[in-house]
Length: 395
Image (tube, rainbow, N blue to C red; front, side, top):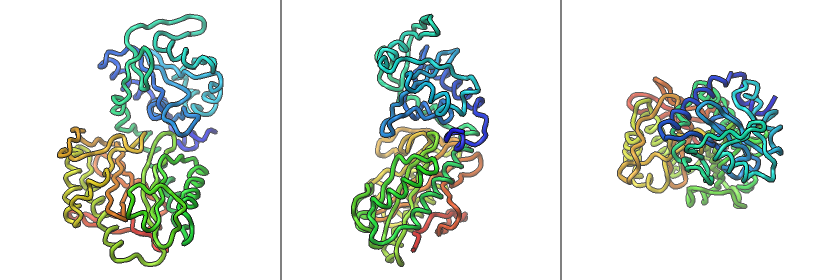
């Protein structure tokens, strides 16, 4: 069994892929495209229900592509990778027979992609489709359509939503267990190494891993781990994925009781996150959530702090599919929040941050980055409803 199959469980993904192919072809018709080539990791993972087309982890560009015409779909890769994709990377879908494989020599990568923009070889015959070709990476002979494809990736299908909840729960468990083991005298890099090791051990791949201790948490919103030693306070910030589905969360720990100042700041960030969560409902405009965010920052005495860091937005196959922005700063109108759309909010003030991933349902919004249930929580009342936000773990 492949790691992807273990992560996904036993869901049948054939129907999911057909839904996604229909979205892709509808877009192609609207855009006047005859062919579309998907080579970015996020789009490949999306169209294949969790396939990973990367060999090098620090890139968005994979070693395999999906080519879609109006009546067929192919996986294009080199002779180095073809067997692995059939037997491992795409094992969860290959038996469905949805995609056909087209293999090229490893030394002919550029020529093969160029050929794909004109026609492709089926056995010994060159099938030329002519017309217009779109690609999510710059490719000679193709129109670059990468940014436009984000809209195809949401909302989730039911299968994606189910997998997302499982990934979120698993990542939260790993991060919270590692946070509980933080001790005075550890370096930020030691802690980051523990978190990364545990994530990899359970099949999750960190895309963002920040660790800040004491003064660095207050000074930097993005504390990349250094050799700085933990004295009393540590914040761990993680984005991680399985099968492309990405979740985000932040957890803070303190050795001994936090100061009243830190308590106040953490609770302020938690209150802002709760206010945003309360407004995150299917059919609500993103701009309305941003207005609620600004109002709560003001109520907490941190009126302009939202200007110091982005506040999050929809999440799925990227750490954020886009950043939600108040219209007053020229943010585009992103329309309304959809059912089965994942969101990650991350309001912060100096030294404190409250971040989790949520899944919007038809009639509620669920926090999904929930671990084993022992992490301390703060109760926040919003319009008569009690919401819970992670507290600082005191160890």
